[in-house]
Length: 230
Image (cartoon, rainbow, N blue to C red; front, side, top):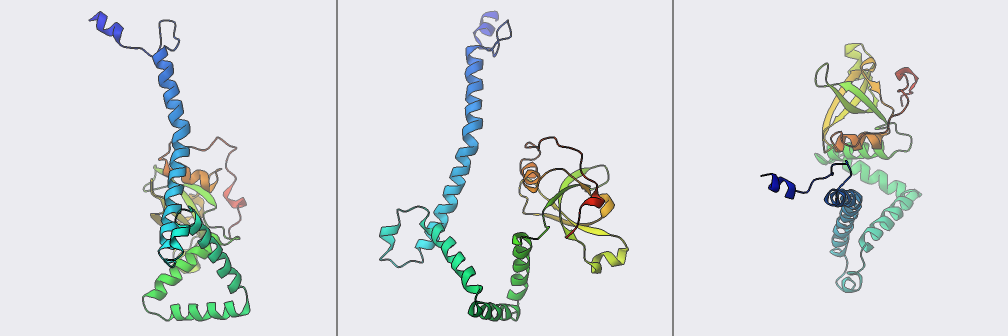
């Protein structure tokens, strides 16, 4: 029995130093830790670019497909150029007239007007340079007192919601793990929302990783009253 135990490689010897097998195991996990994030990132990027290439190629004439099929990233580059040209054209007089016409048409179309207005407002909120949405990470008690969760400030609550309760409320989005695109919208009193000293990117990493990737320790959070609201 003792002979069988001696045949099993140990991570350390009697002096506490790593054995050969223990050192090789440590090197293996270090290699995985270094290469896995890079490999997965490049793989996801390749899948994204390849999917766009395939969709764009399906719209091109058959005569030009053989010459462009082997150029990875051509479809994505074409989409970027097309979006840039659309943005440039809408900045002119004719572009603004066309934009007003299409918006008026979408707003008067049943069913589509609700989807269009919601999506447009969402993109304007997220992409606007002066928007304060998703720029503060906070800590709140949810779903009951004594249990804390990370959330994101999305703006000041409108008067139609805060006026009936007679309180100063803020819009708080509580994301789910590991998919932060779904979650719950809460309207909380300002005094119940505690600002955290971390960026939105760090907060998203914390949520997606289930608490494994935590931000570095920083100075105590600033007082809530000193943070301006948009």
